[in-house]
Image (cartoon, rainbow, N blue to C red; front, side):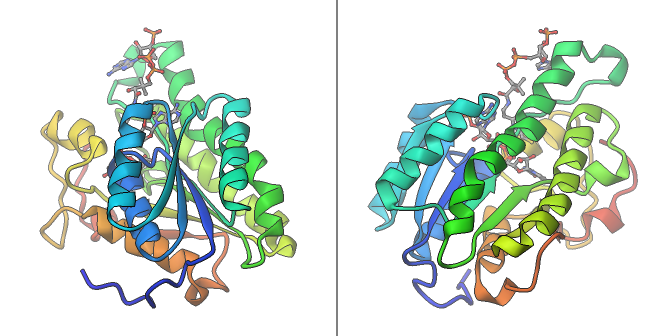
Length: 259
Ligand code: NAP
Ligand code: COA
């Protein structure tokens, strides 16, 4: 896909992407690095993150990997501090890390619920807390973007924990958009549909045998979400805040049930 954005338009900006070593987060990291941003990837598995960082560097990008569990506020603070120490600031925070698995509510343990809510909702809160002073100081205007899903607002049988957590994230983003507007920080979510080749699609569709029911007749690609991220980071989106950018190939309209 040829990007419609000007080459190098994110030069001089630094973005931290949680869960940036795989799937959608990696696709976003590659696109933002390709547009000139310094990218910092943070997640638990440092080997995978390091591999992603090396691939981005090999393609000519600037990248740094940090081990961090988003459930631990200190770890997220430390990841942000590393980004700032290495690149001189933080302009964009991308809260992408998530955990999810299909389990009927009656079989869901207390710890299963707590684990997903901790990663998805509390993890995003930790990102917001750690990033705010730096986003406020960004000379470009800070951006806080969370990766969610419209499933959170539709009811999501088999994924009640993730649905509740992601709905919480969407609500948090709406509140932050208002509170942080005066600080020049735009806050939005991207709500992808099923993206081929990802852990999400493996767990939610391939392992359950559910149909994606997509009107466009194809799964999404990582770059579909990456292009949405580029848009939200660009000047073209400078009046866009407090909203969900749905990039789902019409899944919301086409789905006829399922998880
Ligand atoms: P994925 O590759 O499994 O991405 C999840 C990432 O989060 C991994 O890189 C993982 O890395 C990281 N992570 C998980 N727990 C973490 C923790 N406690 N601390 C730090 N990092 C953690 O799956 P994906 O499908 O690309 O999902 C990416 C995002 O897109 C998620 O927010 C998901 O809800 C959303 N989404 C996906 C789809 C889809 O079709 N795939 C659709 C809608 C929304 P480590 O294991 O190294 O920690
Ligand atoms: N079905 C039912 N319960 C499950 C489960 C499943 N498939 N997977 C995990 N759980 C339960 C565990 O049994 C445990 O509960 P318990 O202590 O009552 O037994 C709880 O969830 C926590 O599991 P654990 O494996 O200790 O958590 P973790 O912190 O090591 O890993 C997960 C977090 C479970 C979310 C793991 O799937 C993960 O790391 N996911 C990241 C990638 C991902 O989910 N990508 C898709 C994004 S859409």
